[in-house]
Structures are given as C-alpha cells and as structure tokens.
Image 1 (cartoon, rainbow, N blue to C red):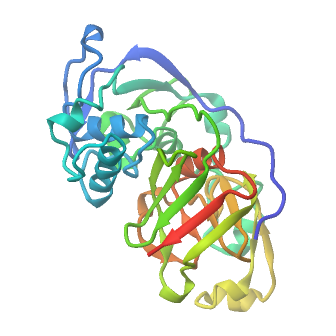
Image 2 (image 1 turned 90 degrees about the vertical axis):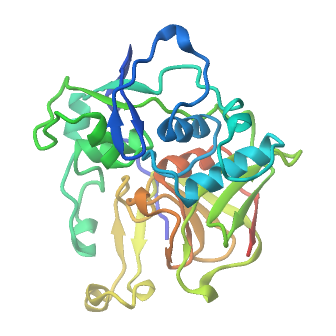
Length: 324
C-alpha cells in the first residue's frame, strides 16, 4: 500500500513565547487569568486536564475540553503508570501528579508557508491521485492538527477570527502542547481492541505513550496475536487498490490502481508503520476527530500527531501485540 516517501512539507508558522490568557472549560471558552508566577500547578479544568495528560505522553484524542470515554481511558492509563487507583476520574491525587509547568495556551503566527501549502481536496480517488499533494485545505485544519486539537476548540479560542480570510502574520491562540522527547525505542506495543487503545512500553514494561486508535469494522478483519513492524515511512504516498474498496462505486468504475501523493489528508495520514501481515499497518488519518471508532478496513488508525510520535518509538522488528 505504501510507495516512496516525499520530502517534508514547508515549515509552518511560528509559536511565540507570549502567554495567551484564555483557557477552555468543557466546550465553551472562559476567560481565566494565568500569571507567570503560578506554575507549576494542577490543571484547573477539563481542557487543562487533557493538555497535562498529553504533555505526559498520554493522549485523550483531539483536545476539546470534554471528558468522554477517551479522556477517561487516558486518565486510567496515567493512574496505572503512577500506581494510583485506576478509576478514570481525575481526583486530587491524580491532578497532583499532572502539574502544568507552563501556560496551557500560546500564540501561533500564521506564515506565508502555511498559506502556500493549502489546496482543495478532491472528493474522488482519481482526483486525489492527480493532486500535487494531499495537504491541508484550510488554516483552521492546519492549526488544529499542530495543536492536537478539535477545530471547534480552536474556533472557541479565537472567537473573532474570520476563518475564510486568514492572512500571513495573524496571531491565533492555540493549546500549548508537546510530547516528551523519547528516551529510546519501545520494547513492544500493545493494542487493546476492546478499549480501542494503543500503548507503547519500554523494556521494563513502563508505559511510554497511550493513544486512542480506530480498529476494523468487521471482526474477522481484526488481527489478534503477535505481529511485528515490517516497515516504517514518514509522509508516505498511498496505492489505491479498487479491490480493497468494493463498497465504492467509483472504485468499481476505475478498475485500476492509483498512486496518491503524500500529505496529512492522505488516506494513511503522515506516517505508515507496516506490519508483517500483508495489507495491515498502523497509520495516521485525515480525520483525527473520528479516531477511536470501529470503522477501518483492518488497519489501526491514529491521529496524525500520534502516528508521528509512534514512528519515533518503533523500528523494524518491534513486536506489536494485539489483544481482545
């Protein structure tokens, strides 16, 4: 399914060091004053809780300020790692281990490179194969992925922005998120089908990262047991095979394979980790908000930013254990 890897896209905008005095509680935006002298401190609301988990390498999916099943699973993963009672509820003991050391929100300056890389995404397989890249369509999409966030949250953090007229030099408020720098490779990866989660562990079975993932819609397409990483690729292209999409009228009409160029809107996103079972892999997705569902043809889908992080942790031969 994967061909050559293209060079990375042009550099995106820059993050400033100025503190943005905005936070998010649930789905609405509330103005909260953050003083530079108040860190480190525990998270004050749901958004900050998700952010603190992400900074610890534990993803609850797209940051949105809403505590759902993925956030509760992330809390449980953190509690187990910290040897706390795994309730999935962020009690005081849990929050005391999730200290924020810097402002939860920062400013992003839109660059000319950001605007130059935008292009409409074709709605057909043939059209996608004829594009120069399957890149972002809008600044909102670009910034949301950069910030590991739901587009709705980015809009709420920037209520006065006209997203149809974003220009170079414009400052946007975004979550101040980053993952810890990997200290080494993962000893193994565990995919739990029932929980729709992927976790990587070191040689001492310490949890390194926890990510939500999508699994196959059909039970018989879900591989169970031990697999191994066969190949890794950053920014891969994608070979569209009509036989894999029998439900697609267009696929039946095309009747031939197509090569789709790289980009975040590529069907496998920005990273491909091929497994030693033909046609199966762990990869990114152009729809990160939908990760955590039973919808794939058999592969395991991650948000693009999580697929990129996993790519730094695995190599050819890394065991991938899939359990029910």
